Image (cartoon, rainbow, N blue to C red; front, side):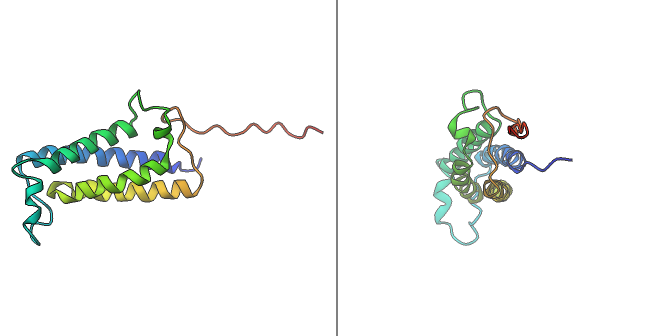
Length: 145
């Protein structure tokens, strides 16, 4: 059996989180509610009457889904291969998701994906230019003596 490729596992978790975030944003258009409304009502302006937070969540969810799947324009680009960019973007998506009531689960999924991406980054894993492929091992041809 081979080793677990953690960036592929994190990618699957992030795809799940992005799909869930899109669904939560669409649901929040019909039932706008801030998650922390039991503490304060000052954040209610972010979801009604103008659905700013819902639109932000929808854009972030679609963007991360296109990034992680990846879309043809993004596949193989430097942004697609960058684990560092993911580690910088996912906290923002998680924060936007946790602010709406329907988005608490994708926020948790993003946190799990960030942890797995961080472990993959710490172990020196790379994201291949061609999506969903394995990194090629160096050919050892033996001694040349």
